[in-house]
Image: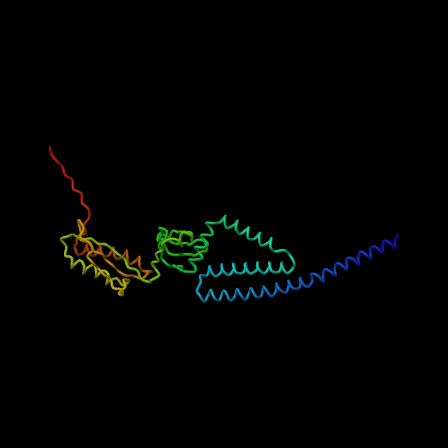
Length: 280
């Protein structure tokens, strides 16, 4: 009985060794090939990512876009590498790819709005209608661009309010960039009485602009008679300024014009009310 049990144990051991040896013969090259492919593939992915980053830096892509595209490219390449390795090991990848595709479709349907914002952010970072620090007007809001993310853009208003605009609506609407050309022109309307000397007032208004050191000489500031209104002769005053000095020039010009006209005793018309009393 003991000899028989020992013989059975030896046979089982030999059978296991034979199966293990056959497994190594069958799958050993595949495993080694998969390991080699993983090492070579990861090395190639690193090289490709470095080259892609160089191209994005050379083309002056936004920092946020650089990071996002690098991460996206890294994940895509790694997923393709894993699928390839699974195929080498003899694992069926068709069902795996179908699962990934189904999951992608479900996520896409659930996040339609977010994907629209993502696409808008991608377009903004590629075509660069504005950059951080620009003063823009979009979606009924005016502010300085504080941050450009892949889904939203943050603005800071003149009142120091933070405005968050979804990139989907931002990229599909009108955008006015007040900074991109480097110079801005203010249009200020000033009314005087009909009894005043038009030429004298025009010289005074022009002197106000010329005396302001932050008003640009090129393009030259200008003053024109724009309208003969019901109760006033209206001038349009046009000083030019840099983007950084625009608001200071705008408000300072209005204040200086009022003080100067008062000093010169030039009337600025304003509405009057007349009360008529009838006696019986």
